[in-house]
Length: 73
Ligand SMILES: [Zn+2]
Image (cartoon, rainbow, N blue to C red):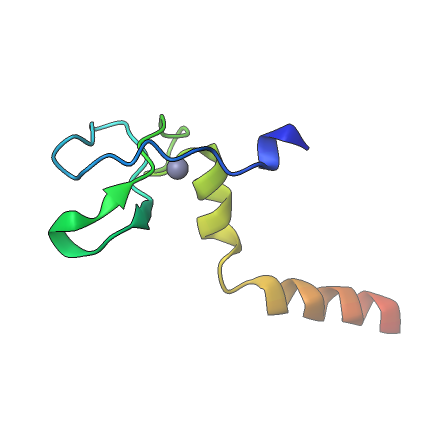
């Protein structure tokens, strides 16, 4: 699954970050934060990879619960 690989971050600063660049923080903090910087996916502040990463946050247990309920049925 090549499209699931983490893209090499461009390590852009907030100042360098364009309006359509991925805002996923990859390292540093506060004014030294570096961002992914790849082109944003449609309708997202993140690139395709980080859009998925953001969406899957905190939902793993929900998905697992779903799987378990399917097994039990
Ligand atoms: Zn990204």
